[in-house]
Image 1 (cartoon, helix red, strand yellow):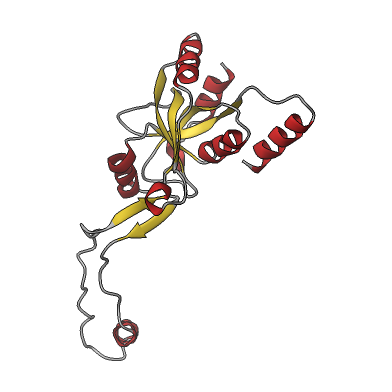
Image 2 (image 1 turned 45 degrees about the vertical axis):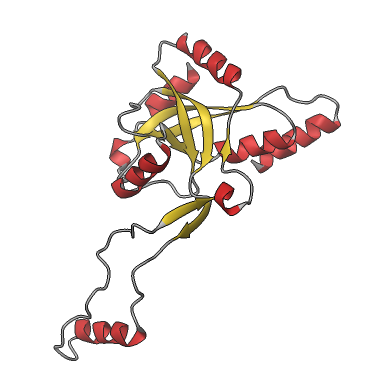
Length: 207
């Protein structure tokens, strides 16, 4: 995003502004939407983990209880572990607050519909399967099925990457249209490097 903003600023100052900013790269694909090697065109770019958590959480463990647990594990005494006060799941009152909710701007950038449609038509010529949908930008790549399910429930995304939203914000600041194309290299969920297929994703991008 910083590099994109710099390039946009330099080009604008030189009187040769860009017409389009296009982010391309590999991404994780959400099950039920994509398979490895598919191409994804973003019709919505969302900063999925930029915001704040809110809600009722389980009670924190008091220091005395924590010490007792350590002592028990070390075998200093035989009293039982403190009673856990939560059920291990997120509270029904818990919520994720987006930038929109917080009044700090928008967590979403929406590419021009005509541009998204045109890119989809062009990519059809590659012979690869092309999916259009929400691509989430995250600062921490999803590595569990639980987080994948939470993102699916909240945003129904087709793919997960890291840069698209921020690059699109840089383009937006200079009044330049932005779009994102991704090739799926792995399923989103439990982190499993053996399931990644970067050669297949990169081959789709080259095509």
